[in-house]
Image (cartoon, rainbow, N blue to C red; front, side, top):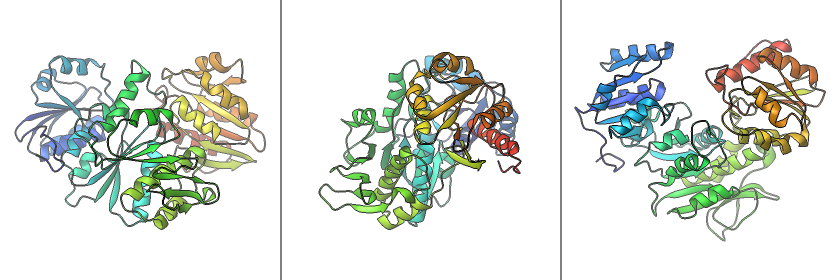
Length: 466
């Protein structure tokens, strides 16, 4: 048995196949190798990242190749560790399933050999911000903790540390949750539920099914932090075992946290107890009501692992947010420019639009992910003077909202910024929250965001910082 009391996935000498040579796949290969497994790691793509990973792994004595998968070798393995980027419908995944070879996520392998306790955070939107904020709160309280998972640092790297931290705050995507079996966080956080990844999932129900895997191994000792203002969250967690703590913008009497009409963000961990103040809304550096909810959820999780109210208040007040998530680029000629490149789905962009009371120019586009843009109309009608669409999704955006909100089309990032500058008036916000993936023009949302920031700064004669 492992340190987390889960059945052993493989023994020393077993062949373990790893699909994908990104940071998590490479880390999983190194972890399995360190545990005595024979490892074969491969990636169907052969770019600079993959070639560099192959060289590093081979230098450590690990068999690896890029540009192909040796299916025969993979089907001989005891278990396959899959990259979350490889869809279940991919040919290689279908072949593995037909051969009845078990598959797991990198996080599952890491969890079974982890000596740290885990806060697991998932939801459709706000995962990275809430994970980073929660890690910041623990750091402010002097608790030995790191953030990992979908946020950047692979959990397998943490599992290999000679002196692991006491706590790991883990961001979990639906793709990662899909291949988890024994994962059981000491504290689990479900932020919200909304349509997403419908380009990959056959239905919304299947997407939600993967989110619900956060609760697979719940028991009476589990502790769950839940967004009480999200009906989908409440329904999903209704019959889950364990102690539940509720975050809400509205005051409530249940154990949890809420926004008090005079005291700001407060907690009450036992029903009937006095509320304890963390911070005022104006103390937060984060923008928007949705980030008040993220702060309540992160604060609750931090409180459950031992952070006192004073350190939570200081942490909430000192956290400046993350790049590409309602990031303030600058205010030029009375126009505020916001980079929300992480807004890769319609619900995220809806939240971003609602975060501002000023008139705005909304910049939407990229690769379509299967959602209708029509649900943005009520939010856009409230304060958007215009929409500028770009990328592959531009014709669909024009088709679905162009009869209600003025929509213009730009052919690239430079033209997008130039058109926004021409149309924006003093007091406006230019909001870059695409509601689409970046893959038509950029390898990821980070590069898309950096490019937007560079173009904005260049358009205003500012020396670049992105």
